[in-house]
Image (cartoon, rainbow, N blue to C red):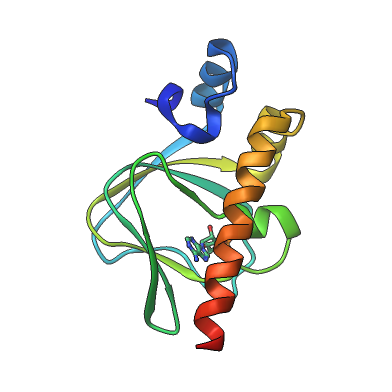
Length: 132
Ligand code: CMP
Protein backbone atom coordinates (compact mmCIF):
# COMPACT_ATOMS: atom_id res chain seq x y z
CA UNK A 1 0.00 0.00 0.00
CA UNK A 2 2.87 2.39 0.81
CA UNK A 3 4.02 2.28 -2.81
CA UNK A 4 0.76 3.91 -3.89
CA UNK A 5 0.94 6.77 -1.36
CA UNK A 6 1.35 10.04 -3.34
CA UNK A 7 3.89 11.41 -0.82
CA UNK A 8 6.22 8.47 -1.48
CA UNK A 9 5.61 8.08 -5.23
CA UNK A 10 9.09 9.34 -6.15
CA UNK A 11 10.84 6.74 -3.95
CA UNK A 12 12.27 3.45 -5.16
CA UNK A 13 10.83 0.13 -4.00
CA UNK A 14 13.78 -0.55 -1.62
CA UNK A 15 13.29 2.91 -0.06
CA UNK A 16 9.58 2.29 0.46
CA UNK A 17 10.34 -1.15 1.89
CA UNK A 18 12.80 0.39 4.36
CA UNK A 19 10.12 2.84 5.53
CA UNK A 20 7.65 -0.03 5.98
CA UNK A 21 10.24 -1.91 8.05
CA UNK A 22 11.22 0.97 10.37
CA UNK A 23 7.77 2.48 10.92
CA UNK A 24 5.36 1.18 13.55
CA UNK A 25 1.73 0.41 12.89
CA UNK A 26 -0.77 1.74 15.44
CA UNK A 27 -4.50 1.23 15.74
CA UNK A 28 -7.05 3.58 17.30
CA UNK A 29 -10.70 3.21 18.21
CA UNK A 30 -13.30 5.71 17.01
CA UNK A 31 -13.07 8.77 19.28
CA UNK A 32 -9.44 8.24 20.40
CA UNK A 33 -7.24 11.34 20.33
CA UNK A 34 -4.20 10.44 18.22
CA UNK A 35 -2.44 13.81 18.44
CA UNK A 36 -3.32 16.55 20.94
CA UNK A 37 -3.27 20.30 20.23
CA UNK A 38 -0.46 22.04 22.15
CA UNK A 39 1.49 18.89 22.97
CA UNK A 40 5.05 18.37 21.91
CA UNK A 41 5.10 15.79 19.16
CA UNK A 42 7.74 13.87 17.32
CA UNK A 43 5.65 11.45 15.27
CA UNK A 44 4.72 11.61 11.61
CA UNK A 45 1.51 9.69 10.81
CA UNK A 46 0.37 8.14 7.58
CA UNK A 47 -3.25 6.97 7.50
CA UNK A 48 -3.49 3.33 6.34
CA UNK A 49 -7.18 2.81 7.05
CA UNK A 50 -10.13 4.73 8.46
CA UNK A 51 -10.79 8.45 8.88
CA UNK A 52 -8.79 10.86 11.01
CA UNK A 53 -10.51 14.12 11.97
CA UNK A 54 -8.43 17.26 12.39
CA UNK A 55 -10.11 19.53 14.97
CA UNK A 56 -9.34 22.86 16.54
CA UNK A 57 -11.36 24.19 19.49
CA UNK A 58 -13.90 21.44 18.82
CA UNK A 59 -14.39 22.50 15.18
CA UNK A 60 -13.71 20.11 12.32
CA UNK A 61 -10.87 21.42 10.15
CA UNK A 62 -10.29 18.45 7.81
CA UNK A 63 -10.86 14.73 7.39
CA UNK A 64 -7.89 12.62 6.35
CA UNK A 65 -8.19 9.14 4.84
CA UNK A 66 -5.94 6.35 3.57
CA UNK A 67 -2.76 7.63 1.92
CA UNK A 68 -2.94 11.03 3.62
CA UNK A 69 -0.65 12.16 6.41
CA UNK A 70 -0.62 14.34 9.52
CA UNK A 71 1.83 15.41 12.22
CA UNK A 72 4.18 16.97 9.67
CA UNK A 73 3.88 20.50 11.09
CA UNK A 74 5.44 19.74 14.49
CA UNK A 75 8.00 17.64 12.69
CA UNK A 76 8.99 20.53 10.42
CA UNK A 77 9.17 23.37 12.96
CA UNK A 78 9.61 21.43 16.23
CA UNK A 79 6.75 23.40 17.79
CA UNK A 80 3.70 21.99 19.63
CA UNK A 81 0.90 20.30 17.68
CA UNK A 82 -1.29 22.81 15.84
CA UNK A 83 -4.56 20.83 16.20
CA UNK A 84 -6.15 17.72 17.70
CA UNK A 85 -6.34 14.70 15.43
CA UNK A 86 -9.04 12.26 16.48
CA UNK A 87 -10.03 8.88 15.07
CA UNK A 88 -13.39 9.39 13.35
CA UNK A 89 -13.71 5.62 12.89
CA UNK A 90 -11.39 2.72 13.63
CA UNK A 91 -8.07 4.08 12.31
CA UNK A 92 -4.79 2.40 11.44
CA UNK A 93 -1.68 4.53 10.99
CA UNK A 94 1.93 4.03 10.16
CA UNK A 95 4.01 6.14 12.55
CA UNK A 96 7.56 7.35 11.99
CA UNK A 97 9.58 9.17 14.63
CA UNK A 98 11.15 12.46 13.50
CA UNK A 99 14.50 10.75 13.36
CA UNK A 100 13.18 7.87 11.22
CA UNK A 101 11.35 10.30 8.97
CA UNK A 102 14.39 12.49 8.26
CA UNK A 103 16.63 9.45 7.81
CA UNK A 104 14.21 8.01 5.24
CA UNK A 105 13.31 11.10 3.19
CA UNK A 106 15.48 14.03 4.38
CA UNK A 107 17.51 13.82 1.15
CA UNK A 108 14.53 13.31 -1.16
CA UNK A 109 13.61 16.65 -2.76
CA UNK A 110 10.39 15.39 -4.37
CA UNK A 111 9.05 14.04 -1.07
CA UNK A 112 9.98 17.27 0.74
CA UNK A 113 8.40 19.37 -2.00
CA UNK A 114 5.12 17.42 -1.80
CA UNK A 115 5.19 17.66 1.99
CA UNK A 116 5.80 21.42 1.97
CA UNK A 117 3.19 22.04 -0.72
CA UNK A 118 0.52 20.25 1.33
CA UNK A 119 1.66 21.94 4.55
CA UNK A 120 1.44 25.40 3.00
CA UNK A 121 -2.02 24.54 1.64
CA UNK A 122 -3.10 23.53 5.16
CA UNK A 123 -1.70 26.69 6.74
CA UNK A 124 -3.52 28.82 4.15
CA UNK A 125 -6.77 26.95 4.85
CA UNK A 126 -6.35 27.36 8.60
CA UNK A 127 -5.53 31.06 8.25
CA UNK A 128 -8.54 31.66 6.02
CA UNK A 129 -10.78 29.85 8.54
CA UNK A 130 -9.39 31.92 11.42
CA UNK A 131 -10.04 35.23 9.65
CA UNK A 132 -13.62 34.33 8.66
P1 CMP B 1 0.80 18.95 13.72
O1 CMP B 1 0.71 20.40 14.02
O2 CMP B 1 2.09 18.26 14.00
O3 CMP B 1 -0.37 18.20 14.50
C1 CMP B 1 -1.71 18.47 14.11
C2 CMP B 1 -1.84 18.16 12.64
O4 CMP B 1 -3.09 18.45 12.06
C3 CMP B 1 -0.88 19.04 11.83
O5 CMP B 1 0.46 18.71 12.17
C4 CMP B 1 -1.33 18.70 10.44
O6 CMP B 1 -0.81 17.45 10.05
C5 CMP B 1 -2.84 18.56 10.66
N1 CMP B 1 -3.54 19.76 10.16
C6 CMP B 1 -3.53 21.01 10.64
N2 CMP B 1 -4.26 21.83 9.88
C7 CMP B 1 -4.76 21.08 8.86
C8 CMP B 1 -5.61 21.33 7.72
N3 CMP B 1 -6.11 22.53 7.45
N4 CMP B 1 -5.87 20.29 6.88
C9 CMP B 1 -5.40 19.05 7.13
N5 CMP B 1 -4.60 18.75 8.19
C10 CMP B 1 -4.28 19.74 9.03
